[in-house]
Image (cartoon, rainbow, N blue to C red):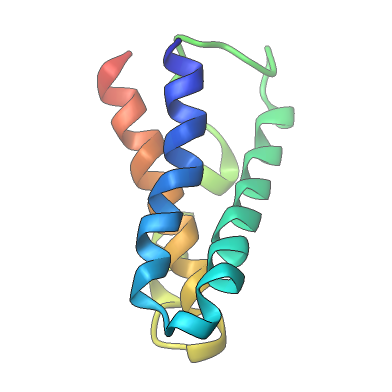
Length: 101
């Protein structure tokens, strides 16, 4: 059940954030943020690949605090702003999951 909630949050929170985009771009912005779910491919570098009791923040390379700082540094760049928002929202949702483990 917790995994389902996590998945729903990873899709719905970017949808809510997309409402700050101009109306004509909301769907595209949502897709850009959803595409940042690809950051979870770094889970393939872990052993075991999936561990429901493991917090990904600080463990996986693309979930490392330095990576999160790099995502924040992308915010001022207009063409990268929405992907950066998507990455930061993803890290926030994963961080929330760490608190609930």
